[in-house]
Length: 178
Picture 1 (tube, rainbow, N blue to C red):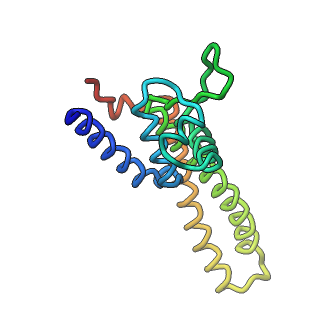
Picture 2: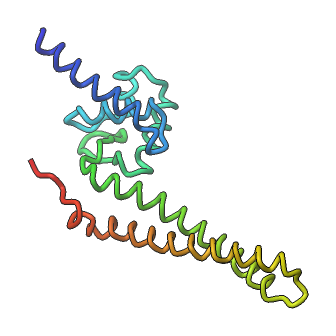
């Protein structure tokens, strides 16, 4: 019995650490506990099994599973003879990080670039208008310079994302093999 308690204590420490850090993925601690619990299961679980194990409501469980699934951290699987949906952890943590990182940053880069390009167009028009006050032209040009710098940053960040998506990152920072 002591060995089982030690095993459970070691697992619980990891589950709680995941729950404390899952906010980095934009998720709640309860989703982190769910992920941690699923991580240590060797077989896929139904929502009812998850609910029983964690004591969460079925609605909360379903919401957490959907959030984990949206981030590709959990996947739905099929098993012959079982009608209920089964879920298991996506065990490739490298790919899970890449998917999350890429999705979030591609969206942010796109949103920023659209905004910057629109503002650059307006500022260039303002700076080139002969009727614009000289002080405003100088301020507009200063803003143009800043936005062009930021645009080059977002171009660089898009290349960083591509490095992750193409797995070139592993040539720069190799995975550690056991």
